[in-house]
Image (cartoon, rainbow, N blue to C red; front, side, top):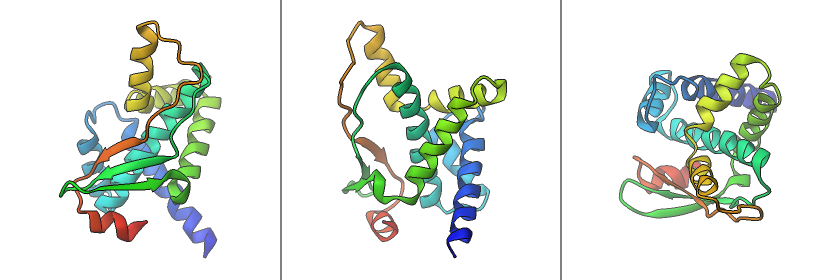
Length: 162
């Protein structure tokens, strides 16, 4: 059973990386709709986007500075309810981080480097980090606030999936 779960996760993350690395897909919504068109539920598609984008951004930031990331993310549901989750409690978290590290470690290969930068460019954390750094801020030891995700789904969908 565990092997089937690992295979499912690997396939889902592979699909997510392929979509997020596609620079012709400009927005999170376009990426989510592409994943849904590939057979993923809307909730899984949103989670894939959130976890992959976050993992790649964080791995890149860690290469540049010693910072502390929040261990939670906040989902704002379609009806405006805020729900907080711990990254460590989600099956995607560790797998997405490991994949991001593997891609960064292999970034000497041109295609791996293209994927790292394409997905990293989607990261809100990396964008904020880059802007702060460009303005001359010293970011060593900085603490990042929890990530916020605006979902098109009701709170009940997220609560039942946790």
